[in-house]
Length: 411
Image (cartoon, rainbow, N blue to C red; front, side, top):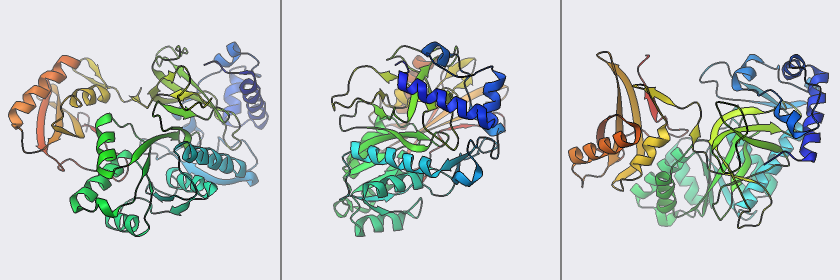
């Protein structure tokens, strides 16, 4: 999917502005000898940027407008180092709300819906992003934020919320709780807009069937705007990306070269109209592919596949490169298992070991099941893990994102 003429002009305009304000990004472009872009070839020679670059610009080195034009900042979690601070102008906030409104519309959500928002507010972009878009749409917002599951469910019933927005982990926790309490008939949910973490078919099917709702994948990241730069439609054939606001490439993570449409690689995003902190060729580390052809819904917006993992979530163990998605694919082959699993890596007696914890109900022989899973994983990745089977509900549930890989080797 080559960049078009209009998008090239928009990128060139961003580059001119960054060179002029000479912020962190402007200096980076100047050092690389970049004066502008006027062709696909020139665009592909632009340097990539990464999260580490953005961290080095802390606190406000990314700001590309005078401070009086900045109305808000958001920040990535900063759990793995210095946080990334992203400044927003009033237009950025409005553009983001417009994109989010479009997301809701693609999911068939209208101003007659009542949207219960469970992701967090504050520096994180999720809660306020879902809210701004819903208000732009004219829907009734129930801005709960995360946690307090009792109150969450009570409000859901009393307000007759029709849409839930959540991480897949929290949507599952709510679904299990509603099932446990036997109150499904008191809940009026019709749709779920789910984002912020990779989730497999098994967890998707459980949430959908236990809550009796249609699910929509939403995409985005704090550094770009937040959630809302793309969403799946009712045909569920990938996520439409709003290419009038962002240009998206898929590259080979090793070579940095663009891969053909249809092939998996790392998502790279360039913001076309962002004012506060434009980003040029930002490596997201999310793995997906551009889906060729047109969606059955008829939309002209390009589509990417659901996120299948991250180029940086690879585990190296016993000389083998393993992605959590490979383990998940094996577990999906066992209908007796729940969607939840946990991988623990440890170093014992001079050797690395991988333990996989999975949940199942009491109707299966735990030992037999464990050896079947271990054999299936070995045939997929080349070595045998230790498999531990526990009852449903034992593994931790999360109100945010579930941590599925715990590496204790370097603790």
